[in-house]
Length: 295
Image 1 (tube, helix red, strand yellow):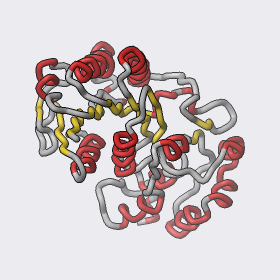
Image 2 (cartoon, helix red, strand yellow):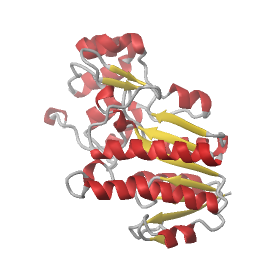
Image 3 (cartoon, helix red, strand yellow):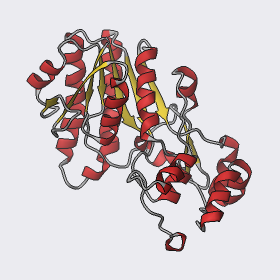
């Protein structure tokens, strides 16, 4: 099987490329030259895409403009890269005989729906997005367009909406693994599972860390989450107390990845403990604590 990964120089795209390369023939496309970019150029370049798609069985599409680009590029460019280029890639992939597409999306697109009033939001694939930014709007538009293409052409498309996955202060990053964060290695594994399951039609999954919470916790998570943390994640509480880190007063959302775990045969491996281990080992993956007394 030969797989094309777009956005392969990016942090997540590179992790997916390397993870898949252990088992499959993988090529990457990115505008930034690097060891995981076999094709270098703009995702909007149709000729480049056609070259990259030769002999490809599966496309993993991670290339996009993201939240940090807001205010630095125009809304029109967001639409060109995140929507128009995604549609063109899917159409060219179908014409090239590609058998499947996996689209890397984001839980951020749920926007205001992630944080309902006076309780933590319990976010699943059936939650209706209430987007806040152009980034959210374009990712939603891309998902809608891919669903229409999938239905029209019988082209299998799996959307993976990944939760927060970038370096942050250690205590924040560790806590987020319980409710709204994911390790980039687990993201890569989810993409492999999606490829290997090769589901028919259009499918959408949230990819987030395994949570100790359930919907019954939502009100208390928002109003007095320390009580819930002590009951549901005593090991995290012990680590925070040992290191002098403050527990949060509330948590505003939980991303539920149980559908992906059940239907893709995927299981997130890297919980809050892995964040602590990376931090203690000095990995740049985790930023220093915001609490200076813990140094």
